[in-house]
Length: 138
Image (cartoon, rainbow, N blue to C red; front, side, top):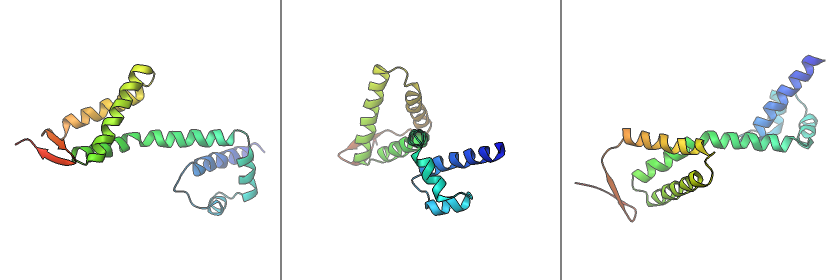
Protein backbone atom coordinates (compact mmCIF):
# COMPACT_ATOMS: atom_id res chain seq x y z
CA UNK A 1 0.00 0.00 0.00
CA UNK A 2 2.81 2.45 0.85
CA UNK A 3 4.38 1.88 -2.55
CA UNK A 4 1.07 2.72 -4.25
CA UNK A 5 0.69 5.92 -2.20
CA UNK A 6 4.24 6.99 -3.05
CA UNK A 7 3.62 6.32 -6.74
CA UNK A 8 0.36 8.28 -6.62
CA UNK A 9 2.08 11.24 -4.93
CA UNK A 10 4.78 11.11 -7.60
CA UNK A 11 2.14 11.28 -10.34
CA UNK A 12 0.40 14.11 -8.49
CA UNK A 13 3.68 16.04 -8.41
CA UNK A 14 4.10 15.43 -12.16
CA UNK A 15 0.53 16.64 -12.67
CA UNK A 16 1.25 19.87 -10.79
CA UNK A 17 4.28 20.47 -13.02
CA UNK A 18 2.18 19.57 -16.05
CA UNK A 19 -0.61 22.04 -15.20
CA UNK A 20 1.98 24.79 -14.62
CA UNK A 21 3.47 24.23 -18.08
CA UNK A 22 1.84 26.49 -20.71
CA UNK A 23 3.03 24.17 -23.50
CA UNK A 24 1.43 21.06 -22.06
CA UNK A 25 -0.59 18.51 -23.98
CA UNK A 26 -4.10 17.33 -23.17
CA UNK A 27 -5.32 15.84 -19.91
CA UNK A 28 -6.03 12.60 -21.72
CA UNK A 29 -2.40 12.43 -22.89
CA UNK A 30 -1.15 13.04 -19.36
CA UNK A 31 -3.52 10.46 -17.85
CA UNK A 32 -2.53 7.83 -20.40
CA UNK A 33 1.22 8.50 -20.11
CA UNK A 34 1.05 8.27 -16.31
CA UNK A 35 -1.41 5.37 -16.04
CA UNK A 36 -3.89 7.55 -14.18
CA UNK A 37 -7.60 8.20 -14.61
CA UNK A 38 -9.11 11.57 -15.50
CA UNK A 39 -11.27 11.12 -12.40
CA UNK A 40 -8.13 11.06 -10.23
CA UNK A 41 -6.85 14.21 -11.96
CA UNK A 42 -10.16 15.94 -11.24
CA UNK A 43 -9.96 14.92 -7.55
CA UNK A 44 -6.45 16.37 -7.27
CA UNK A 45 -7.58 19.61 -8.88
CA UNK A 46 -10.27 19.94 -6.19
CA UNK A 47 -7.85 19.53 -3.27
CA UNK A 48 -7.42 22.75 -1.28
CA UNK A 49 -3.64 22.93 -1.70
CA UNK A 50 -3.56 22.04 -5.40
CA UNK A 51 -4.00 25.58 -6.71
CA UNK A 52 -1.32 26.96 -4.39
CA UNK A 53 1.11 24.24 -5.47
CA UNK A 54 0.47 25.00 -9.15
CA UNK A 55 0.99 28.73 -8.52
CA UNK A 56 4.28 27.98 -6.77
CA UNK A 57 5.38 25.91 -9.76
CA UNK A 58 4.38 28.67 -12.21
CA UNK A 59 6.33 31.22 -10.17
CA UNK A 60 9.33 28.93 -10.15
CA UNK A 61 9.12 28.49 -13.94
CA UNK A 62 8.86 32.25 -14.44
CA UNK A 63 11.75 32.95 -12.09
CA UNK A 64 13.91 30.42 -13.94
CA UNK A 65 13.21 32.28 -17.21
CA UNK A 66 14.17 35.74 -15.90
CA UNK A 67 17.86 35.64 -16.93
CA UNK A 68 16.95 34.54 -20.48
CA UNK A 69 14.26 37.22 -20.80
CA UNK A 70 16.57 39.96 -19.55
CA UNK A 71 19.25 38.76 -21.92
CA UNK A 72 16.89 39.13 -24.89
CA UNK A 73 15.77 42.57 -23.72
CA UNK A 74 19.38 43.68 -23.33
CA UNK A 75 20.43 42.27 -26.70
CA UNK A 76 17.56 43.91 -28.56
CA UNK A 77 18.18 47.20 -26.74
CA UNK A 78 21.85 47.09 -27.73
CA UNK A 79 20.78 46.51 -31.33
CA UNK A 80 18.95 49.82 -31.18
CA UNK A 81 15.36 48.61 -30.94
CA UNK A 82 13.73 51.63 -29.32
CA UNK A 83 10.92 49.63 -27.64
CA UNK A 84 13.48 47.36 -25.98
CA UNK A 85 15.63 50.32 -24.93
CA UNK A 86 12.56 51.76 -23.24
CA UNK A 87 11.69 48.41 -21.64
CA UNK A 88 15.28 47.92 -20.47
CA UNK A 89 15.35 51.36 -18.85
CA UNK A 90 12.00 50.72 -17.15
CA UNK A 91 13.33 47.47 -15.74
CA UNK A 92 16.47 49.21 -14.50
CA UNK A 93 14.31 51.73 -12.63
CA UNK A 94 12.16 48.94 -11.19
CA UNK A 95 15.25 47.11 -9.93
CA UNK A 96 16.57 50.31 -8.35
CA UNK A 97 13.27 50.69 -6.51
CA UNK A 98 13.39 47.07 -5.36
CA UNK A 99 16.91 47.59 -4.09
CA UNK A 100 15.91 50.69 -2.12
CA UNK A 101 12.59 49.44 -0.79
CA UNK A 102 13.25 45.76 -0.19
CA UNK A 103 16.85 44.76 0.42
CA UNK A 104 15.74 41.11 0.54
CA UNK A 105 15.41 41.12 -3.26
CA UNK A 106 19.11 40.36 -3.63
CA UNK A 107 18.45 37.66 -6.22
CA UNK A 108 16.96 40.13 -8.72
CA UNK A 109 19.78 42.54 -8.04
CA UNK A 110 22.30 39.75 -8.64
CA UNK A 111 20.66 38.97 -11.99
CA UNK A 112 21.03 42.62 -13.00
CA UNK A 113 24.67 42.61 -11.89
CA UNK A 114 25.32 39.40 -13.85
CA UNK A 115 23.82 40.98 -16.95
CA UNK A 116 26.04 44.03 -16.50
CA UNK A 117 29.12 41.83 -16.16
CA UNK A 118 28.19 39.86 -19.27
CA UNK A 119 27.61 43.13 -21.11
CA UNK A 120 31.05 44.40 -20.13
CA UNK A 121 32.64 41.20 -21.42
CA UNK A 122 30.76 41.40 -24.72
CA UNK A 123 30.25 44.30 -27.11
CA UNK A 124 32.53 47.11 -25.94
CA UNK A 125 31.81 49.55 -28.75
CA UNK A 126 29.58 52.35 -27.39
CA UNK A 127 26.24 52.85 -29.04
CA UNK A 128 23.90 55.79 -28.97
CA UNK A 129 20.21 55.28 -29.39
CA UNK A 130 18.34 58.08 -31.13
CA UNK A 131 14.58 57.54 -31.65
CA UNK A 132 14.99 53.89 -32.50
CA UNK A 133 18.19 54.29 -34.53
CA UNK A 134 21.47 52.65 -33.59
CA UNK A 135 24.38 54.95 -34.30
CA UNK A 136 27.92 54.03 -33.40
CA UNK A 137 30.59 56.48 -32.40
CA UNK A 138 32.98 56.83 -35.22
